[in-house]
Amino acid sequence: MSVAGPIARAAEAVAAADALLIGAGAGMGVDSGLPDFRGREGFWNAYPPYAKLGLDFAQLASPHWFRRDPALAWGFYGHRLGLYRSTVPHEGFQILRRLAGRMNHGEFAYTSNVDGQFQRAGFPADRIHEVHGAIGLMQCLDDCGVGIFRAGGVAVEIDPGTMRAVGGLPTCPDCGSLARPNILMFGDGGWDPSVSDAQAGRLRAWLEAIVEADARLVIVECGAGTAVPTVRRFCERLLAIPGATLVRINPREPEGPAGTISIATGALEAMRSINSHIENHRH
Image (cartoon, rainbow, N blue to C red; front, top):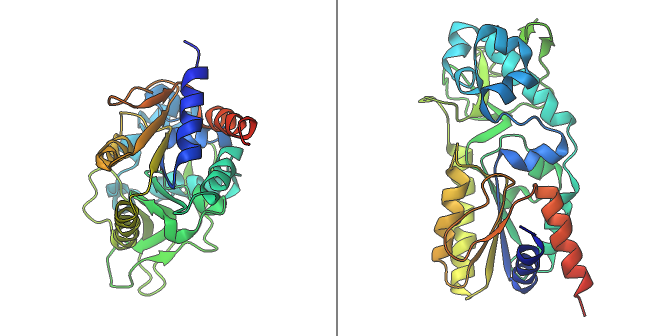
């Protein structure tokens, strides 16, 4: 099926909107060169040493490794910290920023990604909700009361053959205990949600202002699948706002509730097409 129809409808919705909510899942980073962890095979193709151990993403993204095997835990998260720091956000981020800049209420990003790519792309920090936390922030594993602190200059040396950390591991600046990323992991009862909760409060206030102003909201959801449906569910709930439109960009799972504009491509291709359509029809 041709995507020309959905692209045109999406362009019209974006051009007419007063506010932009960007929903971003793991697929948002693929066009920046970040690995696609879809399924065990996708994860193991990106990280062969974990295939030898028989550990998949969900098994590794567990807080118990920080106590049971800290070198394994920080090998996994330390590698990701370095990878995300060195990744340049793709052009789609800048297109979204420019489009939002023309809207009275601007933009807010709601993301399940922990990679900090929205900040790196120049989005205002007070207009981002990282619902699962962020790899650029850390917390004390022993919860000594220090709160959340920045990873800053922390760098973890990784043995590429084993994907294990070698040398010193990140520690709490207050008590000296092992530090962990401020990320919500699987089966995680120790995550400190205070930063994410504050972000959620700002997002609620922004949405309330949109409703109060009777503003037109467009939701552009990029790369959010059904395996971890946090972003999809949130974006669908926003359709309760009168006049809201959902544009769902996903190469494999673009379907949505009635009225959804479904675009079955990657985020970058879709944003380039939407932007070109808007520019070509600008008077």
